[in-house]
Image 1 (spheres, rainbow, N blue to C red):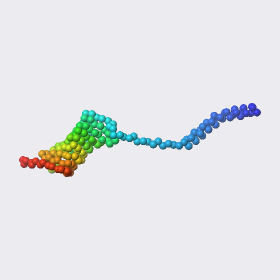
Image 2 (cartoon, one colour):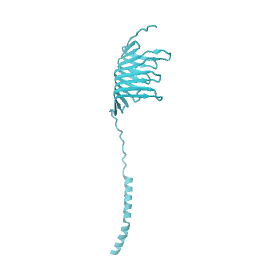
Image 3 (cartoon, rainbow, N blue to C red):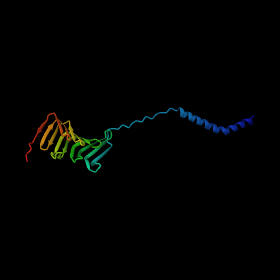
Image 4 (cartoon, helix red, strand yellow):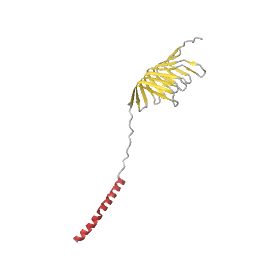
Length: 205
């Protein structure tokens, strides 16, 4: 009897590793099928209103596809804010050249520009100057200058707006108002609030 048991045990011991491996494989398969899957919820990184890069005492030039200068921006310090994709510039100086060669210069204590520089808000001692230009009728349009504590300049569309008191100098003429909206392309100007003007008669040549 003892010899028979020993023989059975020896034969079982031969197949025992295979049996154990099969049990482990079945157990692993059961665990995979029955383990709950927890979805990983991705949390978008919160973008704070903190600058992600600085520039100091800089000059940035922008050119068109033909290599012509479109604009140049200078300043003491610039800070880029990724949440709004805007650039804040201290002691900003912007020179913009239209495809027709029209030069516009904007300066202020502080400027806030959008990503492509086509829209600039000017704060503190804001000045926008449009140099004299010849129109389609070969008539020279005089130099124009806008002054205010705040000016909103749209450089591509040649528009200047302000909801603050503003002074407009056109050639020798001067206008003041509480608010202004000037569209250079359509040659339209809206002055709101207390509007005053000084017109200087042109001397016939």
